[in-house]
Amino acid sequence: MTDLKGTVREVLRKMLQYVESLERHVTPEEIEEQWEDVKQRVRAEKRRMRKRRYLVFASSMTAAAVVAMVLVVTLGQNHTGAPAGPAEPQMAVAASADDLKLSYMLLRLPDNRHVRIMGDEAEISNSPDGAVTVNGHRVADGAASGGERPTAWLSVPCGKRAKVTLADGSAIWVNSGTKLRYPLSFGSGTRSIYAEGEVYLDVAADADHPFVAETRGFDVTVHGTSFNVMAYPADSVASVVLVRGSVKVSGAGKGSVEMVPGQLVDVRGNNPGAPRNVDVEKYVSWVDRLLVYDDEPLGTVFGRLHTVSGNEFVLGKGVSSIRVSGKLDLKYGLDNVLSAISFTAPVAFEERNGKIYVNRQ
Image (cartoon, rainbow, N blue to C red):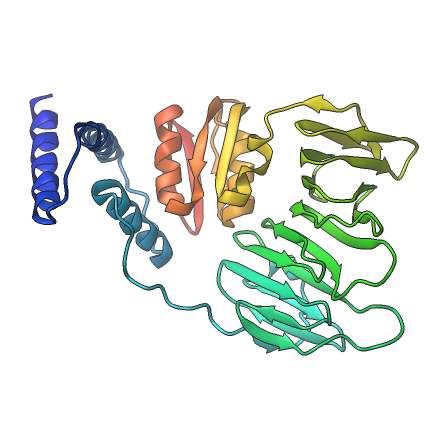
């Protein structure tokens, strides 16, 4: 206990000296927040030291995220270093394997053009004339005139994310492990997209041109609204969560249901169930790189982490059934996420042969 207090005092003393060197006024409230933060960090370090092996991630992006977090927490200022710009997309040949098993995102354009998108995140913009830009780089000049309107396929493997702005101004956030098909431009009829996986949509209002989000076994029809659709092929239950506006969920089987904001509809066997009220933050927080869970088994939490991070977790006996609640900030890297889980659940982590083993303590 004496060592803990001494460590805390020394870290806090150095931190305050540095703040004073910046001639920055520190309020009592800030000091209290910093004190609590330092105590939590010291406890985390002591707990990690008790483990027989350290979990080491060699990812440079994780290290950069940790540094950024320390700067924000201890100084209350933004990091002033300018990040490197996104790499220019590369034109690639058609992939022979399943696109979701690739190590990069793949955008399939008309005329057999394929754009390989490196990095973990991407922004794709589509103009009304069919031009396409990826991370600020123009990859298509415009849609061909006449005939059926050309469409694009976007594949986002595990550990990747993308935001797509459609030609009508609607925005689609595409989660990991998802395929999205969308038109490069819209005509005079219904606006329609197709997704397998998870997407969050903020649809531009247009009463004369309904917007239909199609997925496996059901459709969601809207005019202008924000909602989340989760329909991974491996899951037996799909869901729709409405944040704003109104939607109609129509199953491939019989029946359809109308939804109001704050409701969720589960879809089983192509048949939508009755709407129920939920906390929508839990279902849409992934857009802000947050994972929120409330009294859920760790098996479900690690299943989500596998999808959003691409890492493979091997759960030991009794781990899957442990129920936890909390909020994980994925922006700070997987190492910090696992440390947060270890505070709320009696588990330890070990990395071997590219897999992360999770065992009860």
